[in-house]
Length: 370
Image (tube, rainbow, N blue to C red; front, side, top):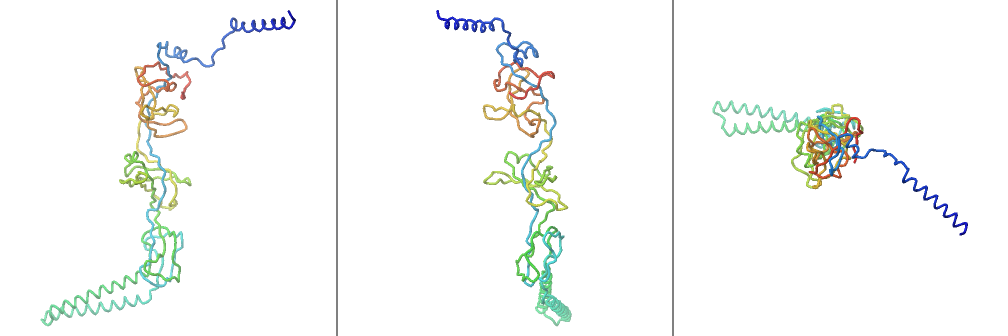
């Protein structure tokens, strides 16, 4: 036999002896984490044979304010283009863009021209008609005036009064004034321009109170009512507070959403129209539980919920609704006040199945993911 064959045989024998030593003398490495069955016996006693084991935690409801979160926009309560009602040359425009005005402040003034003279002429005509009418009444007492003549005198008196009022209105219309308090957003006339009836003098907007407009779905609209408290933050970061003042009854034919209008005080005009606003509407207190979103699962009908354990260790499914999201979990409604929530293994059990739950204790780590 050659030396190579003898050497190979010796090496093979040594390898076989070394590999076999591990089977008979080696120690099994301890597991990093105890098996679920071992933990079951240490925490809840011996497990029932044939039952699935899950980890569960007893959670209790807490009072939580429920909010409806919407995305809206600010909008001025009203915006009006103040227009001229008569023709004439603009002789004065005492306001500038951005000026705050109150009701009755002068925006533009049209030349009076002969309108003052027309008022004086109408006053004289009215006085003449009044004297004529009174004279007719005296002649009637003497039987020297007919009813027809008296009626004609009365008609001329009323016509004179109407003409005077018409001329007075034309004189008043030379002053184009603010119909309400607000801010001059735009100007359309300058001194020296010629105004015609219907020509715009200025655009006036009312910023107090400010409106916040949003749209809600048909599932959310039933929760809202006028008077609900509102809080929010504008895109520049300003905090606002107000109330719901209008909830629409007719949905948009395209989006199927309903308009909601909220009113916010804005006495200093610091909130601008057209800002994006994140709105939270207070819907009152509800009992809610805080859980990890990793525990959500779907029912056979496709509804989102969680699996729990009843007092007989049977699996139940509860549909839940998220009312608030936060860094420590989500707050949900739809669970019993005291709930035995399955935290590990919920995907491996079915509704109605009897299981062996392992409840977390203070010494056991809190597991929130399957």
